[in-house]
Length: 318
Image (tube, rainbow, N blue to C red):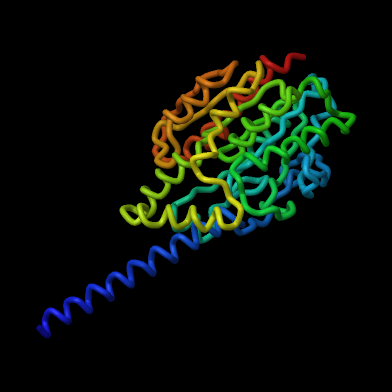
């Protein structure tokens, strides 16, 4: 009997430890979904030899957004062609240095969007880099909605660049990464002001959460994710299954959208992106690239910026 009681006590202790681990992981993950930690800016366009203006402008719903406008070189032949870069979660306008606790726990890698901005600038485009709400130096408006509310930020960015004398409103393109890709798709359903778009590894949140959880939490994901989603929804978040960019992509009109997706993405899904492309009236790709991690898919465009240049040359003709 004493042995039975000791075993029972041990089982209760182990169950308590497991419940505590699940609660801590779920609370931590939910915190990243509601209000992720802010990354500071670690470089400026000026340090790479690009002229730029610090800018602030309102999102469609008035949220204050911060960014940089990088005008094209004076001898550019692009005649006002402008590209807006839209970052992912939980990055900022520069991408991510992968130094936060979440990065370390999930083996995130650095993403330097300034490299892409520099290449686009060198190729003669105006470039706008800005922080989405709840990120970087922009105002807080929790929770993060993975493209739905953030589309108001991109609509605000489009309205802002049209006020710049350097910009031709008829020649505007957008590149979005991950959540930024989702944002592009949700925005295309609301405006025809974007003449061409690139979506790098956009993802349905339900798909991402399941695969991200399995990769990082293992079997505990079956307990962690439902609790994290519940905590997220208590803070105003939407059900994960409701954040489906493919539904928005179906209303993108005739705007050409180039999809880029890594083949070895453990968090996203090639099938998910294929579904978005199939729903898009004027898709290009998907362009599937070899990868061993989700971050390889982002790096592909940074390492091959001429793909973006060629796409925009085709759809933003001089």
